[in-house]
Length: 185
Image (cartoon, rainbow, N blue to C red):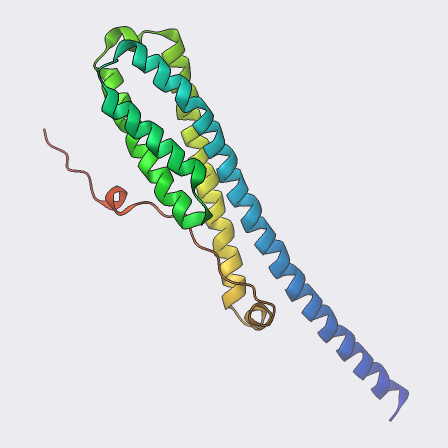
């Protein structure tokens, strides 16, 4: 074997090793981005959960007889706090979103409450947080898409299987949110 042949073999081996390292590191990077983006959703959910007791107490002062709505919000908030994993968190978050809609519907019936500056500020903060949650969910799903593609496309799928990289779950909307709303005039 000539020196040129040995150099070609060495270059080929270095190329293969580099490719393996690159593919593996890319999978690790994408998996960590999925974890990071999910933690960003959790940060925003925590912020919302911290705002809710203040909002409920403010509304309670005006609408004390709406006990059922307050209990529903409190229970839904507790479910979000205790949720584990993407699917469970998604379901609990959707339940809380529905409960908050009920709470705001109650608030609509009390003009003096809607004029209260504390309520307005809390409602504004909660709306801003809901927007951030929505953006964080979208970012999470974008990262999950890239990661899942890497786990399923060749040649990185070979590494994903060998090193136990499992696809991640998307953050999905509940079935009720997928229905087309009925508009009547």
